[in-house]
Image 1: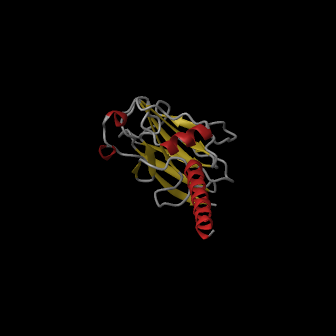
Image 2 (image 1 turned 90 degrees about the vertical axis):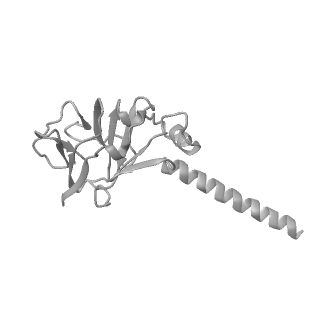
Length: 191
């Protein structure tokens, strides 16, 4: 009788550990294959046939459609350059250059990954409408308060994330992230 009890306990523990780890991996999103540059992260295989099973399960559950491997690459961050979470109570300056791409977009999203609703009805910027510095760099202020120039409004009451999508970029066809520069997300002031 003792061996049957031990087997039943082992099966129960394995089932709980297996189901918990699968739930955690699917809820968390992409688990394997992250590429980082500063505060930005991307998952190169998320939109390809080589995506890991957890990424596929996460995509199936969320309904998200990632960029295909030949279309582009999406970088995300929910922290600033100091590693602190992005919050609507603060103003952030996104400054610098982006890796080479035919087009890029920058959007703010809430904690559920949905585009952030705001009174200005501006969910983001794209590379063809941005005001640039003479050297080609740019600065975007992300804030709940109105600012002149490149201003991305956010909800003051929620934490948020940023997504930088690069379309038709050499990074998807063998270019390396080490050769590229990513914009920096700096916290300016908080209320």
